[in-house]
Image (cartoon, rainbow, N blue to C red; front, side, top):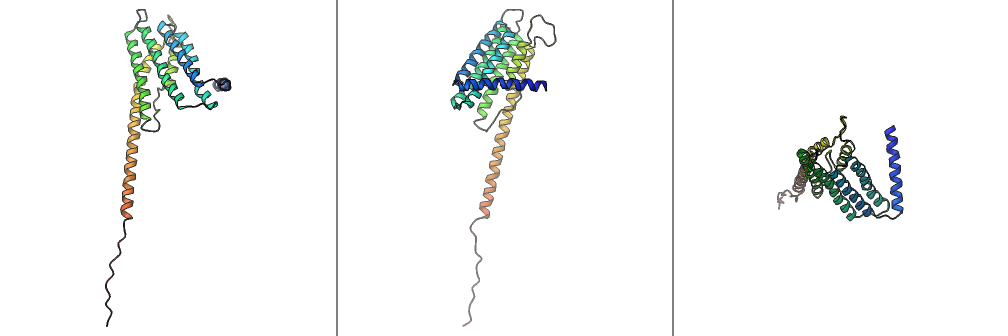
Length: 239
């Protein structure tokens, strides 16, 4: 009940911000660009090692990511280009965070870790493949958003890893970013494989349904062909 109350309170705040921005005629695309600019700043903070600050900035950046679509719908300014811009810049937002982490762990400091650089790079490639698989699949099937590690889940994991980072802390829950990178690296490829399988399954189902329909149509056509009249015997009348 307490958590539900927090959720309702947060939603009321977001709804109020959406109404204020919509009535102020703020262009939703402008909000999208602001969000990605803040994400770029977040990537820089990760690269410099300010993880906790990066986590706070990441929360603010993704607030803009939530607002732009809602403002567009409320103000009646939903456009195909707006959707394209939003999805394209989301990929950039993901990549700058991964690159920032790769830079941090590649630097010659006490936190240098070749393994973490590799995991961040693998996570980056996996995140790109997940997004590409979805975009390509949806040109063939209606929807392909399966898998447990989509962008919102990635963002939450980044925030957890960032806010848990406290240098020198021995708490079990502190400094969880390396564990987050493992989850992102493995989970991204699992999600990519899931989407590949889902697309294969859906395409095969469509092909099977089409073949069944064609077979039934062929059978129906053969059953309703031209009727033949039985030959009538000739009757000879007696003279």
